[in-house]
Image 1 (cartoon, rainbow, N blue to C red):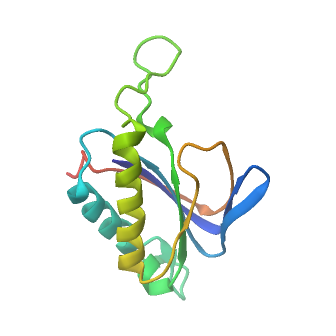
Image 2: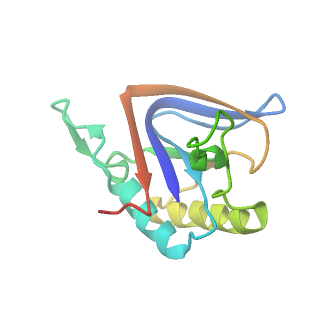
Length: 150
């Protein structure tokens, strides 16, 4: 499972011209799911995300977590995070999970994150053509891969 976590001053997701999710302070999480991912990956990754110290304290130092700031989150599925560009110029997405595997894991990721944050999170629509807007604060962008925990 791969995630791109972006600290946001605001973010939103629009599908078919309708804004379906919007947040102010918090994180936009782009999540890529592969066939080998499990609930163990979800638990580890959601714990890492809610506890990342990427928000400024009163002295302007990145010392606070999403939980400490009571920030919000939007989760957007993005199979292209598993693109392989080793051969040629057309990315291969062979490692990205097919919808029958990815959708239940995506939904479990959202449910687990909501449980750890003790609030609803915004989402995209799995497989839809989405317009994602982000005002990246910092900018702060973190890439995490559950297959590379060391």
